[in-house]
Image (tube, rainbow, N blue to C red; front, side, top):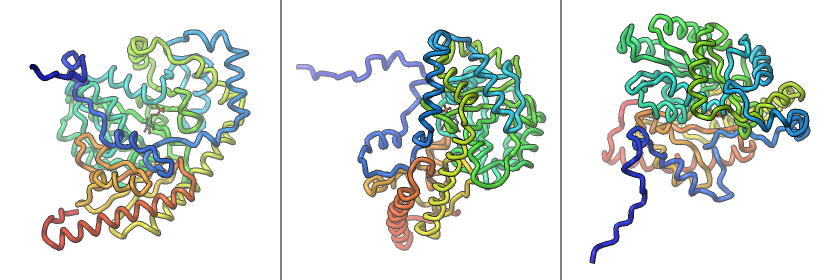
Length: 423
Ligand SMILES: Cc1ncc(COP(=O)(O)O)c(C=O)c1O
């Protein structure tokens, strides 16, 4: 009798090589398994959409299903509805970026923009520079096109330009494989740090000297809780490719993002987008257009800023109160996240199960690096979604888990069972 052989994936021999290597992270799988209602989540990146005023939403949706129904339910242009692009160009002007609708292409969230940029510009083996750590799903979007991703560390002033320059020297001037540098200059995800004006200027100089495109991803720029506005890279150099989104200032359920780039660059991206989806959701575009033209959205933005600012303060105060002296963390002036660093010998990924048991989630640091190893002693904490009371409680629980782990490591170190790596 032969043993029955169960084949789980009937198409496993047909999968493209570049997809075969993509892996769902163990962390995501663990979160999916964690559905207990008492768990406080510091792991996501969600805005609190309960803060949105119902009347404004109703007004914008009403416009889409009554006044503009024929447009909203029909196919639209690949680059996006002109009136929506005009409305978004108007809100870009507030942050110092002057672009015309023909220099803007609407996407299904900034995430699609990342994918389109990868598909348009990256061949296998091309070089992409990113901050290390960086936005996890930008890495996934680029990785699908099999580039070499080089990480450049940041400090409290954003990406380290001295280390970038060293990396660029190693890559070499005139290296055709060097295509782009991806940065989140404001309240970086996951680091929470903001690039200084001086470093922005230097980055632009280096992009000319070494001939690479700058991709400026700016989902959090308007969510500033202290300090002054920083001029976007795009406002300083027209060649910069700027990515915007409504996800954090309005609603991520409406999938609207945008790419601002020179017209010839957009023409290429538009061709790729045709193959991806013909056009984005015209319904979403009409709703967004009306939200930003017919409702007091600036007032709602101020509500977001006030609420998230209070939540950030609650997290900073709780970290100060509960976290051990061995821990350090960034002090974000805005955005959704901060980055905690623990001693080198700690592996935060291995603490996740204990944290879940204690009723709190966080994102282990190694998920934000291409090598999946660097950042093991770090974690990303989100402060936008939970109430200040929940945040305080979550940090208290997490501190307990960390303290127990540190005690264990201390015992191992004292017994000589593990060597303390240099910090
Ligand atoms: C840095 C960064 N870029 C892009 C995105 C994707 O945003 P969207 O919802 O517009 O696709 C996110 C979402 O969290 C993000 O943090």
